[in-house]
Image (cartoon, rainbow, N blue to C red):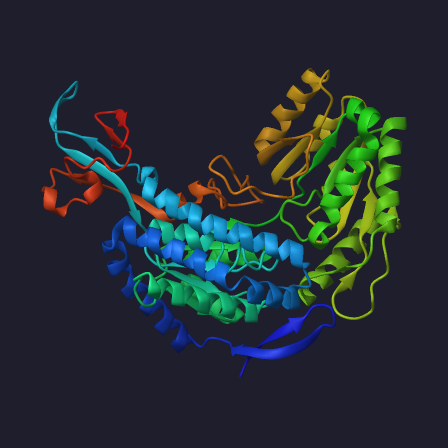
Length: 503
C-alpha cells in the first residue's frame, strides 16, 4: 500500500501519514461524481457559480490560522509569504465570482436572421460553454495559489466545470485540509456533490489525464513532468487540451546607463528576487545580462557580496533539492569549475541548499544555452557593446523578460523590447519579475518551453481555457441559454456586430 506522507522539509522526516495513493477504482468514482455534477452545476447558471466561488473564499478565510500554520510546517515557507499567498488565493476566488457575474467572458454574440451582402442569413447565436470535468495538478511552490484552491481550480469553476485535483506530494496534508474546507463551502452554497474531487499519487495523476471523462488539464510544474502529461493528453483516442506552465530563465538585461546609475539598487533587487521563497518561483530571474566594463563589474561585485551573505535555503522537497544540486553542479562546470558567489552552507538535515551565483561568458552561452535551475541560483553573463540582443536571441522563451535602463536610453530599450517580445509573455521595465498581480490585464504565460498554450493561468482571462464555443442556428428561444435569448440584457453582448452594454 502506497502511503502519502507529510514531510517536514527542515528535517526531511515524515510527520504523519496523510492518505493512501488513490486506486484506479477510487479514481473512477471521483471522476464519475465530477461528471454527474456537470449537469446540475451548469443548470445553476452564473448565480450558482458566483455563489460557490464566494463561499470557497469565505471558507478559506475563516480557517486562515489553521491553513497558514499547516502550510508552514509542510513547506518551510515563512508565515508572511504564506499569509500573503492565502490572501491572493481568497482574492482570486472572489474576483472570478465577479467575472462570472459580469458575463463578458461568455462572448455572447447574436446575428439575427436577415439580408446580408451574401444573401439571406439565418439567425445565429454564439456563446462559450463549459468543457466538462477538468483535471488540475497542484504545484509544489505555491501550495495555495496554484494548488487545490488555486487559479486553475477557481477559473475552471467559474467556467462551469467540475474539478478533480491531483494533490502535490510536497504538501498532502494541506491539500486535504483546504479540499475539505472547499467541499463544505460548496455544499453550503448549494453546489452539487462531486463538484470538487481530490486524488493522491503519481499513478493517479497519469490515470487522471488519460481518463475519458476528463476534458482538459491545468498543470504547473517541471518541463519534464509537464511534457510527459502532455504526451498522455495528446495520445488519447480523444486528445484534450493540456495547459502547462513549465519552465523559463526569465532573463534580465541591464543597460550600460542603468549599471552606472543604479548598480547597488539593481544588485539588491536582483538578489532579493533570486533568493526570495528560496528561489522557488516560476518567474525567478535565472539569467542576468550586464554590460562588460566598470559599471557591470560593480553590479556583479555587489550581487556577489549579497549572495555570499545569504543564508542557506530550505527547499520544498527532496526531488527539488536533488535537482537543484545537480543543476548548480552543471552550472559550476559551465562556469569553469567555480561559483562567483556562494551563500551559507546547508544545515546537513532536511532539504537545505546553498544560494549560488555563477558567471558564464556570452560565447559559451550562445553555443549552448543554459536551462532553468529551480532554486536560489542565477547566472551572470557580460555582454560587449551592442551584443545583448544576440545573446537574448540564443535563449529559449520564458514567462518574463526584464529591462533595466535609464530615461535617455530610449533607442536601446526599443531594440531590446523588439528582441524580448517574441520570447516572453510579460515584459518588465526597471523592476523584477517575481510577484504576479492577479488582475484583468495580467498575462502569465509565454512561448514554449515556458508554456504550451497561448492562454494565461493568472487573472480573469484564465477562464477561457476551460470553455468552448457553440453556435445555435434558428434555435427556439426555449432551448437557448438565458444569455442568448431575446430581451436579455444582463451581460455585454455583441448584436449584429455592435457591442452592447448590460442594463
